[in-house]
Image (cartoon, rainbow, N blue to C red):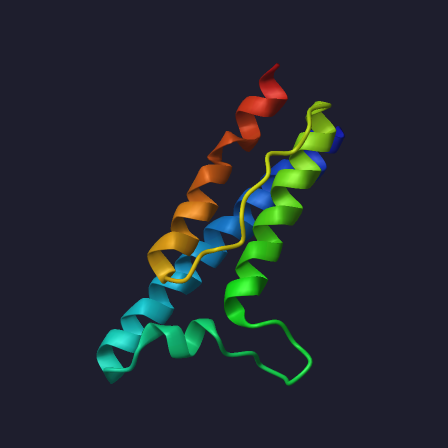
Length: 103
């Protein structure tokens, strides 16, 4: 089993699940008529990062791990996402993981 097979598909599964969770958060906020920012700034426990930072961290792990496996420098993303749409766009940028490994 290669490092690619052990990691990239796992990253993709996790990122797809995270995107689906963001869809559910958006639908929940709309149904309950609350500002989605409330969900994005919440943590499950006082010493946890807010949900926005959790998403950014998951993306960073995937891009940094994938880039290192491909022998390239990981791209730098600014951590400035404020909305669900922006977080989903950050996740979508990571579709490049497979292309790094094809080199």
